Length: 133
Length: 62
Image (cartoon, rainbow over all chains, first blue to last red; front, side):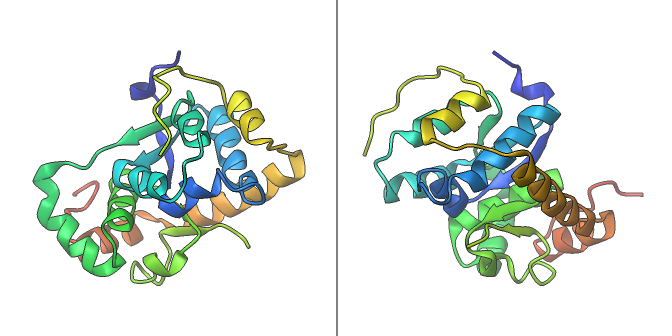
């Protein structure tokens, strides 16, 4: 078992990207980042609200498998950042996407998503890596 | 909704196998290229601009 606290976060997965792992034709788009993260000693971060939102959309046990990965970490937002989150919600339009954006800005890493439009107001979408298709 | 299976940590290979994902070198190379471009866009200045947008301080204040 690795110690995630000593591995840098390399990428944030939002709700749509997390869900993509459970969809046969899209799972490759999470498989590649996961492989790359493991190869580089990095972590994929799943914001807790994004994981919850994904779980509301599927009963796939694959979510448990993803969360159990050595190269995945689930992050909860800091309650003290409530005002920043509120502002980010205005920009992203949804709470879960806002947490993904905020963690992206915290760690200085991109957010993988199937809905790049959610991040369009962050320097015209520069925060997002769209999942193809 | 499925029930949690507990905190059993697994390798990326096990996660890929569970979903039937076969990562190829070509696919990985394409992903690396996309990731590198995305990271290149996130310059310190760009990050600080976006952080300021939501009321966060610069990452590395001078």
